[in-house]
Image 1 (cartoon, one colour):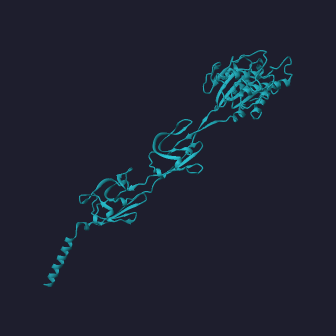
Image 2: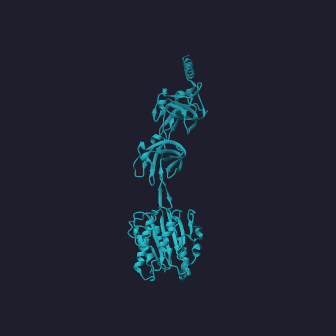
Image 3: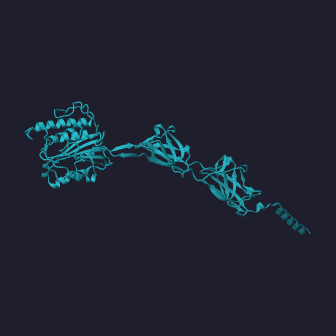
Length: 474
C-alpha cells in the first residue's frame, strides 16, 4: 500500500512540473548574433596647380640680297640659305616679313605668321610659300647697298600696321654677298673707319626703335634720329638682334651685329660667315635666350573628394606642399558641387564635380603650389541589433561593445506579442537622437532589437545578442 502511494506521488509531482513550464523554456539551444561595425573611412586628395604656356611673340625681318652679285653664290648654298626660314622655332608666336635688300619701301615684300595675321601694305603668303618668294625677289643691277638703313626704315614703316609688335622679340636676319657701302664716295671698300662709323650710326637708330634704357651713345652723322631718340615710335622690344650672314671680310654689318648684341649683354655670335656650309644653327643662340612665357594659374576653389564619397566637414585638414597647414580662416567647406570652376585667373576654368573647398585670402593657390586635403567619412550610427532566428524574449541578453546593458535599454520589435520578422531592415540611423533610416543603408533580414538612444553604437563598435531560439527563422 505504501509502495502504491509512492508511485502516485511521483506521477503527481511530474505532472505539476510539466504544468508549471511555459513554451519559451523549451527553445532550441543558446544562440549568439554579433554585428561588428567598420572603422570610420579616411581619405586624402593631393592636387597641384597648373599653368598656361604662352608662345612668346617673335617678329623677324628677313632682308635677302637681291643684287646681281648673288649669282656667284653656289646654288646648293643658296638653297640652304633660303631654307633658313624653316629653322624658325614653332614654339614662338612668330611673324615674318621678307623684303629685298635692295629696294624701296614695302615693294616686293611678303609676310606670314603663325597666327595667320593679315597686316596691310604687305603681300600675305603661307609659310610653305616663303622659300619660293625669296627665290622670286627681283634682281637689281649695279645698285649701292644700304642694308642698315633699309632695316631701320622697314621696321619704322611697319609698326603701325602690326608687322612689328610692341614688347615682342625683334630679330633682323640679313643676307649679303657684300657689305653696306652707303658711305662710299668714289673709294669703294677702302675706308674701313668710315664703314665702322656707319655701323655705329645705324646701331643708334635701331636701338632707338627698340626702346628701353639706351643712352644714345652710338649716335653720329649717319644716324637719322636725335641722341635722346625723341619723336621715335618705340617698340620696347623684349630683345633686339641683328643676325648677319655675309663674307668674313664684312665690316659695317658685322659692326651692327656686334653693337646690338653688346647693348643687350649677349655674347657676340650674331655674325655668320657666308662661306660656311650649314646654316641650320643660325638661330640657336638667339632661341636659347628667348624666354617662354608662363602664366601662373590662380585658384579660389579646390577639390576635396568625389561625389560618391561621404565627407565629415569637421574632419577636413588642408596642407600646403611645404607642410604648413591652412587655418580655418583660409578655407571654407562648400559641400558637393557640379562643374564648379576652381581657377579664376587667367580665366575661369578647370571645373570639378564633388566635395569642394572655397579658398580665402592667403589660402588661395598659385602655380606651382599644391594642396593636400585629408578628411574622414561621417560617423555611422546603428540603432538596431540583429537576430537571424526567432528568439525567446525572456532569454535575450544584449551587450554593446562588450558591456551588458539593462533590459530597459532595449526592446524586441514585435507584432502583438510575437517577435516580428523583417525581410529587409536598415539598421543604420541618422544619429542617436534621430532614428530615421540613413544611407547608404545596411540591411539585414530576421528579427531586431531596437536600442535606447543612450545605447546606440557607432564605428568600430559591436552589438552582441545571446538568446534561446524557437527554431523559427520567419
